[in-house]
Amino acid sequence: MSDTSQTIVKKEGHPDGLMTLFFSEMWERFCYYGMRTLLTLYLVKSLMKGDAEASLIYGAYTGLIYAAPILGGRMADRFLGYRYAVLLGAVMMAIGEFLILGGTENMLLIGMGALIVGNGYFKANISTIVGKLYRENDPRRDSGFTIFYIGINIGALLATTLVAYVGETYGFKYGFGLAGIGMLAGFAIFYAGRNNYAAAEGLNFTEAGLKKVLGPINMVQVITIGSLALIPLCYILIMKNELMDYILLGLFAYIAISMIMAGIKEDKTLGNEVAIWRDRMIALIIFMIINITFWACFEQAGTSLTLFADRNVDRMIFGWEMPASMTQFFNPFFIITFGSIFSVMWIKLSKIGKNPSIPMKFALGIFQLALGFLVTLVALPFANEAFQVPILTLVFLYMLHTTGELFLSPIGLSMVTKLSPQSFSGTAMGAWFLSFAIANYIGGKIAAMTGGHGDDGVALTLEEGLAKYTEIFSTIGYVLLGIALVIAIFNKPLKKLMHGVE
Image 1 (cartoon, one colour):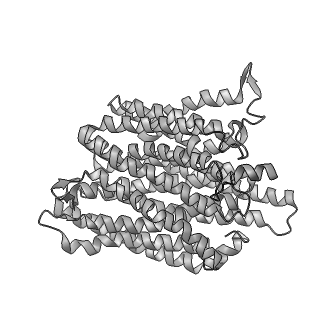
Image 2 (cartoon, helix red, strand yellow):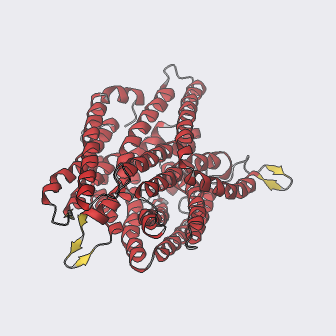
Image 3 (cartoon, one colour):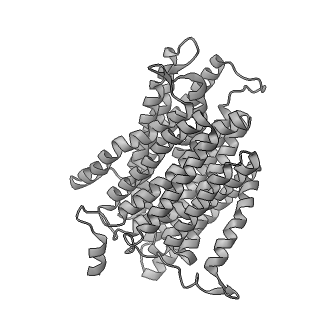
């Protein structure tokens, strides 16, 4: 125990491996957001897709991106170990980006498939490693996850500036290629720094993973080869995205039942008279539903808000017109600006007993998201003769979305590691990312309703488009205000289900 403690704790108060994981995740997010930043515009402007079709493809892709960690987390828990899962994911994501350089719709979809599977291995498991660097009830955990979250957003900032500018200025293929190079950098940092996070549990192949199943071939090798077979499946699901309705609903029902059963099993193992772990799993499922609500609206950034920026936002800044995709940089910029403040703030508030409960943080996050969408109503009277609102509209919108995100997202990652049993932590993290999957898919459906065409299929004028965007964004804002109020009202019952988790 003493050796482990000495290995884990650094002088500045955080585990040795946090910075290695910080930079590895930063470059993986550079890869993912580089792809995401350009995707909608690439579909509309290069592949000549309509707004609605592009939004549905985007929603299916990002939905699958976040569904894949369910499988990736499960495979790591049972067979692969967290380290190999992350390395496998990094390689597949890099390959996916470079496949897109083929320039055709088929190559795009195959590349998207590789990115989906690779992200499934990488995303859930690197977050799990961060959680396993901290001992149970360690007060530094929320701060550590917030620092980790800043790394995510540095990667996103680099992607939404550098990749966005290169892609829109010199050609989309150069942007996608740059994102792939970033993923290779993430792989190199994670592998080279493997000794820094060696104190985390569950890094190595499991006994079941090393078991021979096909002659000399073990389960790890079977899973590695089998992962390639999932790429054509992803291709089909993106093209036939209506199937996602049934798949995601079925997955949610399955994972919810699995979580509750895992909680009941843990209570029986520990001999708990009160169903502590069962209740915590129920609480986690409720937070998943809240998370879906938040991110379905937040993720308009890559679709409807980018197209809104392209058509109805005056992006001229001192004679230079900002590329539409680059407007997505406001979110990671504000995350980096405010992230350190929030990281310190939670610790200070905890020391004086004023730290809001997790349910209240979620309610406040959704409240700020709502205000962000309502900024478009405030900006409407300031539209110019070309029916474009000032760029400050997006500045304030994304600022409010970002502060809302900081109340919810890094806290959510930390919460999952607290509410789930150790033996179920990788799967629980995968389940958490399922809520992002459903949210992104629903977000694509919402974006499809905001497209540049009316109900009759006729393209809208800029004036009509501005009116439609404003109407839908403000409606989203009002609905979110109501949801935030409901969560605040049920704060105490939710806290009771959590049995002391803060």
